[in-house]
Picture 1 (cartoon, rainbow, N blue to C red):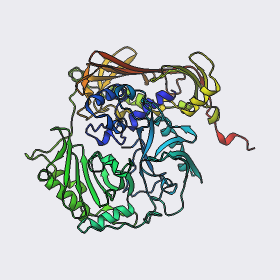
Picture 2 (cartoon, one colour; picture 1 turned 30 degrees about the vertical axis):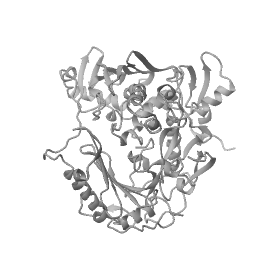
Picture 3 (cartoon, rainbow, N blue to C red; picture 1 turned 90 degrees about the vertical axis):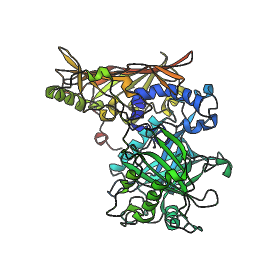
Picture 4 (spheres, rainbow, N blue to C red; picture 1 turned 90 degrees about the horizontal axis):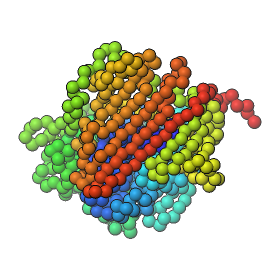
Length: 604
């Protein structure tokens, strides 16, 4: 469907954004759309009750990068990285519950990878991106920096790179964090050597070799991280008391980092900074089973402070050095003796014969019971349903395979009502046209758009073709293994699947997801997610409504059905005040077309 629907579904796939995924709530990858709608309402209200206003800038970003982080120590050949990591952040700072709803958000650069286009263009962590390819990236609460548009632009750029285009550019308007000076930069790939991911590692271009005056077992490793690591914001570690922003006239503290592993199986990070005029080292280890540990140390290897966040048993905040000693010693051993330059490609890799996840055995519960990931219980009503048989599983598999297929075969008119302003927008999408003409704004609230409204629509990415074919894999939203039959009718079977979510803070069992599959076309007719029971967030916010409904229609038996209606919304109650948001988009006037082929256009 159109821009807003694409944005909503996009958020299901990008919520590993520097904030939530690295905070106490630890929302999982593939967080469902209805959770976004609900917590988009409940989150600000709950935050207002539980967090100081000064934290609004970071909490507003709570949605590990909207652009998913590529593994820093990947060994396989891959296409070149533009080299910047971003997350949404409040641009006009919300200070009260009321102003939060009207706050503006922009992409905030959280990291710059060495020897990439971003590094060569002079981008710095803490800078804000005001425009991308001439289009504004400043958006409201439900666009959080227009990341749907940002994601689409990035994907287009990556497609050009993978297609072998010799010169791909990305023009950004950047604002400095303290001076507010705005400049325009152009990222160009491929970059000349040295470049990120080359077969032979070279020290980052233009970086001055670091001096570490303090002695100790971490001195050499600290120097290596400062010389080779990823330049990043240190506030991402959530230990704000270590790096007070006031030390640099409001500038965000930066340092250099490297990480090994991944968030699901186990991850190890080392951050080194000289922000305070001394060499600080922050070690971090995290996994779903053991939670997240952070240790403040120095080149001496002495443990100064430690923090622990864990879901079950629930624990949050600073812990005593004695409690953290064993796990800290294991992490210290990893970075001092088990990590080094194993190959010519990367400066930091785990040496052969060592399991980087061995530390998680040390982090097991004191009573010897192995820690386990949070497993949300299934709803009793779901457990009573009969499991799908072999034939029924085959029916669902066929429908699943058609989801999102053939979107470029159809021209259609979309009518949508937005989450924020509730204006009714009508656009015509025609894949047979060149990209610049593929989406046309027909009307706003029943009237022909003015030139200014068309320009705003373009700035918001409205002219970038989008379809529900961008729906992420269902495997990231529901558990495909536990397929049950809710209803077996004459023409269709309604399947129910449990929502995937291992967060202790989001009650996945409170929702039910139904998928209606036509027995003849063996394709989805409807996908519906709805709230079973109300629930509370942060004690004072009660979620009373939440749901998503997608309807599909078959226009040609030879092609996959297309989404023709999307509804999404939610409502919460705080004390005696009710807040709600909803979105609706419909597709009509479908016409079969041949997708535009640039190769068939005569050269001028």
